[in-house]
Image 1 (tube, rainbow, N blue to C red):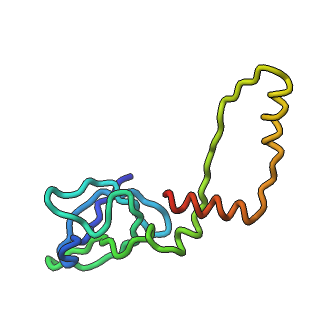
Image 2 (cartoon, rainbow, N blue to C red):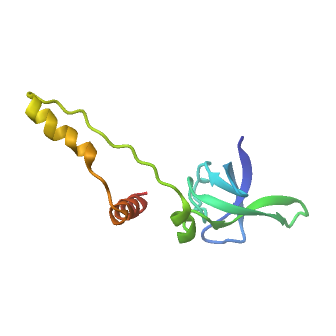
Amino acid sequence: MRHRILVPLLCDPAQLRESDALPAGDGCFRLVGGRPAGERLLYRPGEIVECSIQALPDGSKALVATRSVSADPEYRSKRTVFAVTGAIVGARSAKQADGVMRAGEIKLSDADRKEIESASMVAA
């Protein structure tokens, strides 16, 4: 279910523009709307933002994006990154197949896992 939230402009955070967003849990939303023509928002589409209900100058209340949770290092360390990698391998002999199949026997140390996870966070 999409929500309309207000996002501050990059050049003037006091100015707000409507954007579509999807709930991301814990009171946060993922921005999915496009950018207004000729304007840059403080947060980009795809970012997860924390929102609060704020009173607007006309007296109404609305959800306003207050900070990027995606950019928060603590959030990045909490999220779980799943990766699936694989390849289709052909072998011409049983000896070749035996060497390839042994790749599944490799055990990663905790240090190896952390290195892979940190590299995947940098890529994301």
